[in-house]
Length: 482
Image (cartoon, rainbow, N blue to C red; front, side, top):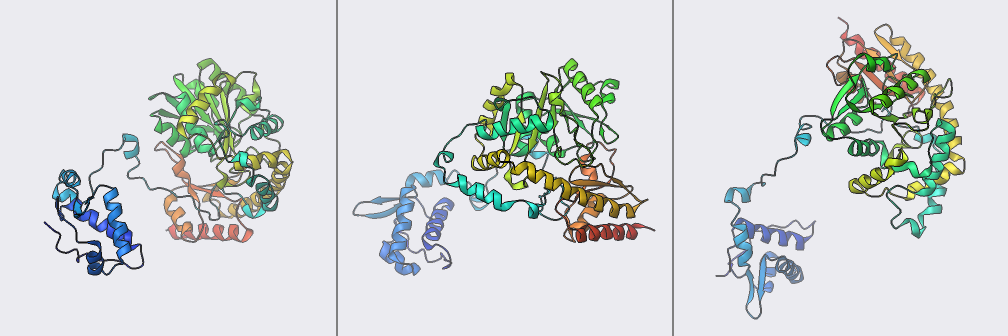
């Protein structure tokens, strides 16, 4: 039997005609409109019938033959492949017309089904965005050009990370944060999120207990949930983790504690040295790992930040982590972990399974940026710039009292504005409609006992924008007043 006509096919001349012809014939075979053994018209006739070039028709038919939809019989012509029709018949007519049902997802993936994805926005007041207009881009681009044509950076470099960067980091962390480590203890990651996920994969089994601050970093909570951990929260005291609560309640079964002691996220509290020692002693006695996320440690305005917990004793159960997203710029996606010597190989092996190597070009650039002194100079400039913005924004937000309470410790790149009896998601959306990206304070809580308000990044803002958002918040609150 011969196919009498394929004239019902239609083509959009703006797109690839060969691909369109291939796709439409393949679909007819799958749907059963063309049956096994049917012979197609000769290429010249088909080209004339469809108003296509013969070359286009020949190439489409060759592709269909190569993929098994058609078979070419020497001296006879081109036919619908019988074996392909047998495979197509396993689909019901309804399934052939509609999308096929997909296999079931994991329970973890399904748990996110009704949750909106909050996309990062490069807008003023988005927490975590740096003042990119103040970054020394000329120096950075010179270093990029230096390394861009180095062929040895185009191959594999190593799962653990670029050695010169790890060496530069070990020296910097020792002098600036009191971290006790060498380059062999440092693992380069694709940003802070991969660093946390890597810790979760290495340290946790399903149903292990993980302690988190409340409010706390929601992305860390998602990483631990992905490993099926049982997350329990500990409250804050003076806007940092309440170490005394660990001894007053039963947290003794916890396998891991995640904290941000140098600048609590999002509330901004700074954990005193005495509490750091108490926390370290508690973790050591209970055989609990500490993930010390040294968030915003570089931007303390009034005094030098308290030394890292990791360096307070020769051997500690502490995994120290940081990233360059806040000190350089967010799109770098380069972070790092400092882990005890005894478990370095375990982290490297798991990172190899999770993601493989981290891109090396930016690692090489950062290594030079640090070793040549550009990093230290940049941080000094940013401390002055962010401090001036912090002072200005703090003074502006004080105008919103008493309805609002400003949480403003002398550190970091954001402020928290507590506002009682408000839908902070509605306020966030209102500000977003005016071009300002903020975070709802309630989103950082896991329990039902939530505080409401806003987390406001100020690093990437101008004085006019800070004045404008203060006015917008006041106007929104005025509309709510009966």
